[in-house]
Amino acid sequence: MTKTKIITTGGAGYIGSHTAVALQEAGFEVVLIDNLSNSNEEVVHQIAKITGTTPRLEKVDLCKEQEAFACFQRHQDAMGVIHFAALKAVGESVAQPTRYYHNNLVSMLHVLEAMQKHNIPNLIFSSSATVYGQPDQLPVTENTPLQEAASPYGQTKQMNEVMIRDAVHAGEIPQAISLRYFNPVGAHDSALIGELPIGIPNNLMPFITQTAIGIRKELAVFGGDYDTPDGTALRDYIHVMDLAEAHVQALQFQLEGKQNEKYDIYNLGTGVGSTVLEVIHSFEKTSGRKLPYRIVDRRPGDVAMIYANVDKAAKSLGWRTQRDLDEMTRTAWKWEQYAREKMGS
Ligand code: NAD
Ligand code: UDP
Image (cartoon, rainbow, N blue to C red; front, side, top):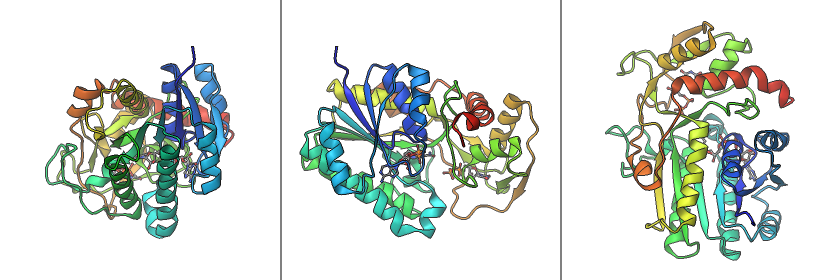
């Protein structure tokens, strides 16, 4: 039987590679489109080791019009596109806004144009909780008003959502879903794929694992005087495999014709917040290591607290997270220990 083909842009990256595994395990044929600007070609073999199938990798820069269109033409039989490809470092986006606007907006335009040209009917987009800023009420639902984004990166997520919404409402593409991720962490249990931050990590979990393995001296905990249970900032961490499985369920929902709103939005989190100290304690428990850390000043632009209401995804998609914080820190640590040498980095 022919498998349903799905294009994943940015499919060689952190979330894309885990989603490729989940898609292949669910019986889809997966094509990865990636310019490898923040990923490694080796990931294709790692996905094959996990699933038994090597996905096709198209080394294409989606900002290059001819390259991008030619690639979509080769795969015009695809039934859906999951658009992960983007530059994602918040601080870097403040320093290099034009590069971020160019990459994240032009690639999105080309995806929309190519889908329209080849009648590819379904789109799923990687959005982010960053679109909510510091909301007045917690937990945040999909109807919580958006706030002006604090960074060019956040602006591109808001703008991308608008571009998709308008394209759908005008009938240029039949239907789309934006998934607003909260804080994705952890790795596949095999430790064959995971997150590979380039340089000094900005995010908490890779900074913790790099500190524990000795690459960094100590973790700076940004802020100990927030109005939270222990004074450190609170986030809704979600295991990357739970996130990956949400993409499969959202796609199946679309393919089965169950999407009532032509453009729909879902929060993807656990619904439970954890403070920085709770993450550290979970890490110490699952790794058996003491983590050197020091509480320092707040990081500019950080919100005190945010966590998701995930009722909508549970009700419509039938999706719920399966993995808790200990599973997140355990797999992140396993990946840090075993994976770097395997990925040749
Ligand atoms: P990642 O950097 O690991 O993956 C993104 C991939 O896109 C990379 O492999 C990169 O090479 C590729 N890419 C970038 N620009 C491209 C272009 N012009 N053409 C082709 N490929 C290109 O990042 P990730 O963590 O897997 O994030 C995936 C998506 O999820 C991104 O859109 C990101 O903004 C979003 N997101 C991530 C997080 C997070 O914390 N990781 C949170 C919320 C949303
Ligand atoms: N954080 C920290 N030290 C670090 C990195 C992050 O204390 O080295 C905190 C950060 O202030 C935030 C939480 O960890 O409260 C998650 O930060 P991350 O950058 O991973 O995600 P964000 O929610 O900012 O997108």
